[in-house]
Image (cartoon, rainbow, N blue to C red; front, side):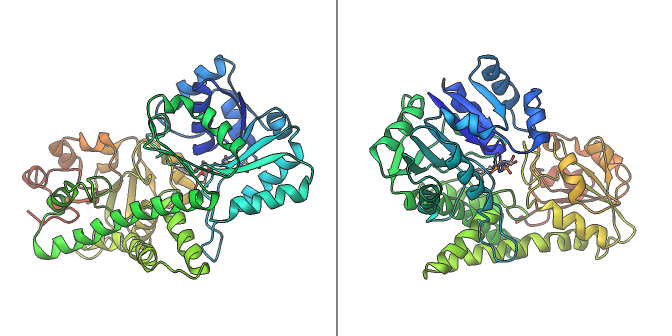
Length: 437
Ligand code: NAD
């Protein structure tokens, strides 16, 4: 079986490599010349554990290829996946579909035989139908189907998520499209992954509803964390106490500086707009967006308060810049407003991230010092802030950290440390949703 994957970013590259691992011949089309050159040279343009080996193995086996010749890639493909970006459109919060439609138009012109055009990108409800109309306009005689196959992988665990998903969602209306996609995902069926077949609109909405629900859980526990701080409760015990209830579930109940990343912020915003335009506004989703935005914007103020009300002339070490560990993705990372505000308020920022420094540099203000490791960042700092919970930060010895620093303020926005151990090591320790010890 042959497929084409349009877009070699996080989703296109990981899912393309995983389909190749299933034994399918996959041609990945990437428009960005630098990314393509890296991929062809065996270098990964993104940081994702296990990806380099998976790609190398499948390229060596002749099942995975990278190119920019879209026409050649789709010519013999039974399915063409659209995995291009759908960022927030400037100004109105809607998903920007210009990359999707541009790719679809190119695909429509290039297809030779019958094929299924599948959106893997997260697209607003109704996009599948509009894609079908667009293809019919460009190539009225073409024999094609349209399907929606939203992707649920998480960066940092993308291969595991793709290979062992909780479910696969496929929106399609023709038996032929269903047969092609069933065949493609057959290796997963063998390990009993449920495939949810739905109408196209339903599949499109499932993706937004899933992300909005998870974002709502995170936002809920963040609000509970604020309340815990006021009333002397511990948010971790609250999370455990509610999460053990099977109806609630334990995942996504970790308090922090507010959600970021390439999906939750843009997808909650897009769902908010979709719902408003459909005449069924979601006040819950609107609240999630507003509460999270305010939280991210307010995190720096916490740090300033922990430093006694001003960071002017102080040195602040920032550990972690990416929106979560095990990725180099900086999109909408909480570190962005935090570092910007600290610099604006006159702090010297010494930053370290295990994978995201290169991506962070162009997004952070001038004057930030980029360090070799956590201890280097802590050297001479008055305050230290943990923004991303990389494992290597958890393993830092409190005494060594404390000795490296000039001051003793530790703001742990991910609650990675034991408050008692940190206080004993001489830190003035500030966590999220936990009473000060
Ligand atoms: P990305 O920006 O990393 O990758 C998109 C790639 O498509 C880029 O490399 C770009 O150069 C390429 N591209 C754009 N137009 C092209 C064209 N016409 N031909 C060839 N290549 C083209 O984006 P991503 O994070 O992979 O996200 C892609 C989609 O998947 C989005 O809709 C996103 O919401 C969704 N999604 C992302 C994740 C995630 O964790 N990143 C998870 C699930 C779903």
